[in-house]
Length: 79
Image (cartoon, rainbow, N blue to C red; front, top):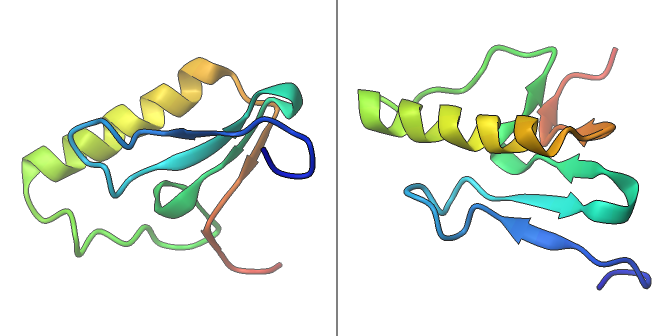
């Protein structure tokens, strides 16, 4: 709970537990962690082989399946 709102840490039990994100069900919001970037080139240095990139894609798919109304990226450039 944060400020009375239930939150869920998603992805900690998947193949890449360092790729977690926060899901706030009431707000239908995702705080994307290192998974989500906006307006920048995606950092891929820590996903140099096929398997880690597939884990990243699977984590992004799990975010997509939640159908969030709001997604807050972890990495971005301000406009």
